Length: 179
Image (cartoon, rainbow, N blue to C red; front, side):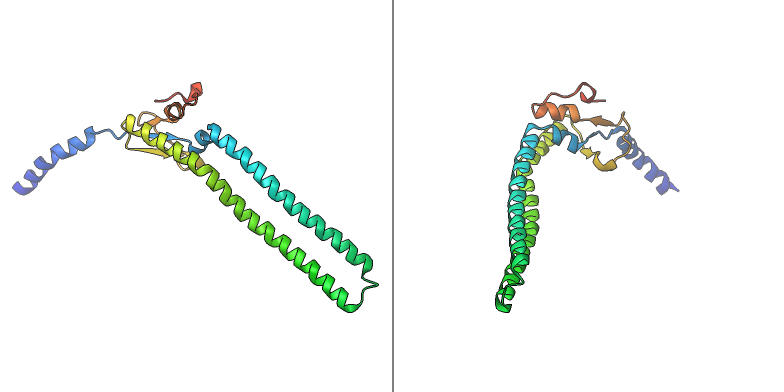
């Protein structure tokens, strides 16, 4: 009995200490801030221009295939068997190259977009860390994708405004900081 009483007496200050410490955290929509950054907007323009070049090359290859296919259809009656096979092989090769180019270009475009956005994301993440540190927050939640459908306003701090300010962007009045 004395041990139980002693344990309770010793644990009481620890329990009171744990309850007195308030956990402060922040939250923001990473994507909303990211998409407001001028660098992101420029990367989207650059990406669109690059995609347009890949699309133009794919269209050129498709037009070349269609032209050669039309020539093949027009002349197939007059071709000897060996020329017919050669032309069919050329058409198959053009079609395979076109398909391979489309597939490869999708991968190259995905990588190019990642490469374009990486320095922007790094800058945003540095700003988020700096704001979290300045405000003494334990962590900052990303509310994108409904991953955090509710945040108790008294416990959390909307850090959208401070992060935008840290990035040198003007925060909208409704996003102006702490709750």
